[in-house]
Length: 430
Image 1 (cartoon, helix red, strand yellow):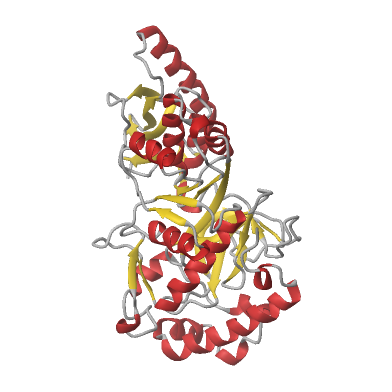
Image 2 (cartoon, rainbow, N blue to C red):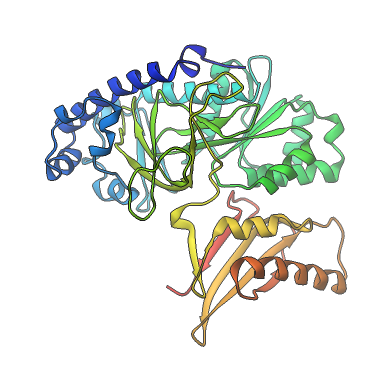
């Protein structure tokens, strides 16, 4: 199902012309109206006339998360405050986080992107979609809600609550689609399996986003719920969820390229990489009003594929976002990504959905301590627990390069029962 064929299936030449036109206007507007960007461009000896199309994108300066924090608010927002319809935050509204403003047009474009994503999962106006995201201060809940409204679906705005109750609600309201974090949907899938609800569900698809996840996690969700789980990508700084999403063939997430111009950088030299090579994902917003961004460095690592997809869409695709350059841990001199820890643990059938990893220095050596929950539905004997801990220790040792100290949390209900995070890392070496 394709929501907007005229845009999602346009030729690459048509798309390049469209993107070029948007880029030229964006650079001129930012130069004239945003002192922050004007200073950056002047430092490089640039003027708006130097940008004639997307082939000139590499001449422009980068923007980082630190830039957004330090320049907030007057140095970043380009429209008067009265035009901002909504604010969202990357974490909370009180700390030094990335505050983002959306105009009414931004919200409309956002809902268009999410509507396209929902259609990629073959959901539409005849479906009942349950939104299992928190609604504030983050952008995921409202973004999913607006997209579901746009396709005409009936909406169950449940947010995150008592998981067993939400599973029963799915059955009662004949929910056919779910949008939520992979962590929470995996927790929900466990409940569905434990309560024997799978056969009574009407689910057709689930869309997972707002955090990195792995193929192991996808397989668990799909096996337990009996439907495809589609990967979605987004950032508050861009437009929340919907920046990219998988289609039915699940061979990468289609980028909404009429809204976002995409590059891949070498993580060390910052040079633009050729097609198909893995590097840091960079976006330029082409239609954003409240917070336009030029060459925004996400720190997320992936690759881009430009060949036409079997689904008929011509929009480029990115691979699953499994790690970020900012999520690299150095343990005893070895680089380990947080998602590698997740991959090792999620592959163990007895491990539940959340884990806490604590790294300390003891006698000048790195010590790793892991607290996790087991997913058994009955009390375990000491021998059974010891066997599980040894298996987890072996799995993690091969990844992190040292033997970790592993324990089961006392709270069987979950380490982070009301938190979307899957792996929480506490690095006490700082």
